[in-house]
Amino acid sequence: MTSKITLIGYRATGKTTVARRLSELMRVPTVDTDVAIEERAGKSIARIFSEDGEPRFRDLEAAVVAEYLIVPEPLIVSTGGGAPLREETRLVMKSRSVVFWLTASVETIARRMTRDETTASRRPSLTEAKSPIEEISSVLAAREPFYRAAATFVVDTENKSIQDVVDEVYKLSQSDFARS
Image 1 (cartoon, rainbow, N blue to C red):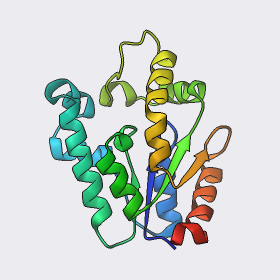
Image 2: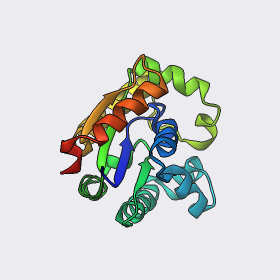
Image 3: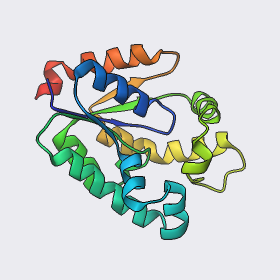
Image 4: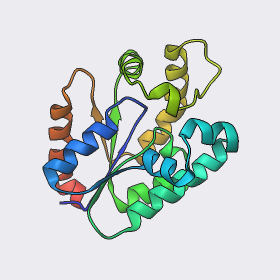
């Protein structure tokens, strides 16, 4: 079994929920890097973006991801959607964990985001797009190469229950490939 699992992907693809369920199943602690960043900064991600700028947020994110992945104990890390944007962060993820890229369609992501009451208050708009669909499409297209570069495995969450996704991640994390 691998000692570290990192979950990446766009907002609302299930990273935090899957991490919590995997944590219970595997009896391994989990950390949500967005929560850790907010606790350290003493403010929401949206406020960090507006007051300090995206580069400062990415600095905090890179430091938090590296800090959690460097510890020797087993851990499940749920990252923010932009965590793989920096090469240094991708390299830490790939060298210190098995990385699962959780995916879903633009429409499904938009639907899930509207159901998440914390999205608007905690997370900034990332583009000047007129609609959520336009923003998701634009940002997802820009991020896809970074997700692909970081991922050990891709897990489609479309039309799957959380438990189905958890089972798939768990099974893949136990594979011979994940152990190497």
